[in-house]
Image 1 (cartoon, helix red, strand yellow):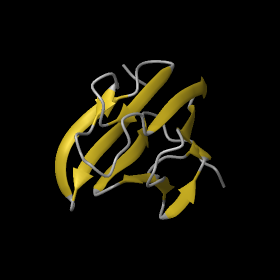
Image 2 (spheres, rainbow, N blue to C red; image 1 turned 90 degrees about the vertical axis):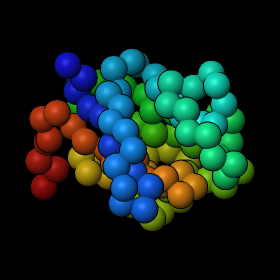
Image 3 (tube, one colour; image 1 turned 45 degrees about the vertical axis):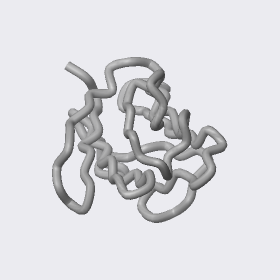
Image 4 (cartoon, rainbow, N blue to C red; image 1 turned 90 degrees about the horizontal axis):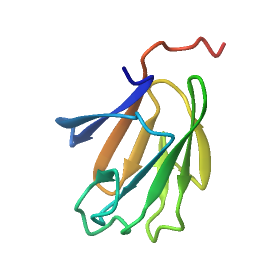
Length: 104
């Protein structure tokens, strides 16, 4: 079982659930990506998520043209937290941990 996953939605409509079950998961509109989103506003290789330890995931923008946003803020790199919303074009990827940590 993956420690984390993305729930992909567009305009609050469920599209797909993707487990983050590799050390590095690539996202973009190109065919070589682990998560392929065929949308013109996304770069071919738009972003990547790296597992950096138990329950620790980093998202990095791969110099995309239109940027990667986490909770409505443009990021180059960001440590994902449970329920973070990653926005790529018109798609939202909600990050969920299997066992959420209390960050308070």
